[in-house]
Image 1: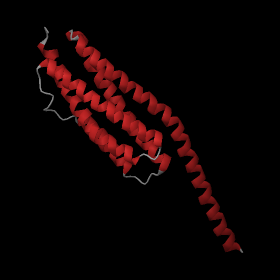
Image 2 (image 1 turned 45 degrees about the vertical axis):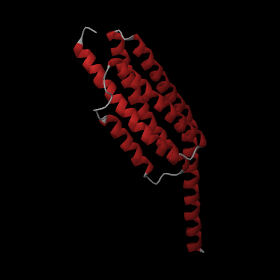
Image 3 (image 1 turned 135 degrees about the vertical axis):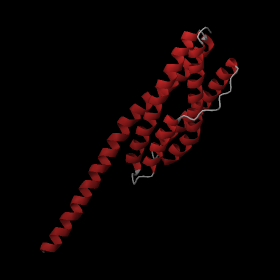
Image 4 (image 1 turned 60 degrees about the horizontal axis):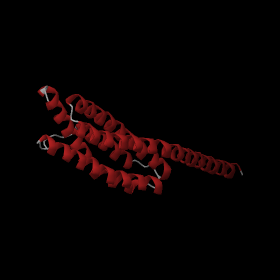
Amino acid sequence: MPDQGLKELYIDELKDLYNAENQLVKALPKMAKAASSDELRQGFEKHLEQTKDHVQRLEKIFQALGESPKGKTCKGMQGLIEEGSEATEEDYEGSVMDAALIGAAQRVEHYEIAGYGTVRSMAETLGVDDQVSLLEETLEEEKETDEKLTELAGQINTQANESGNEQQQDEASSRDKKKSRRVA
């Protein structure tokens, strides 16, 4: 590998992704637990298993590089997980909570897609084809997860909107009843 500057940056970016994936391994069970939709919960559980595979692929790359994956904290993922955690602490219920969880999860997926796209490009330039294929496999899984979340968001957002409309109608009906009692 002729350019040591790019190789050092590549390793640094890989360490960032490794830490991000490990943070996500801890966060996904909490997101699954907070989901009311069975389909969303199962999606988070499936992505947890994929994320564990992502960690193993990164470990394989570090082994090939003769490097340790540890030593870096991914502050970007830390912030995204913190924001997602804040959403679970809101008073949202049912499909509205699920919509908030999907938003948090998609922000994470987009962050990972950007990270894996970056390191895959670096690996191509560095000529480490075996690593390119591992990174490409993870990148495709991240894109698929994002697409599934987008599909699920269509259904869940509709449900959240309908439940919000029903709640507003119930509140309006309750106000009308109180007014008519006062008039009578």
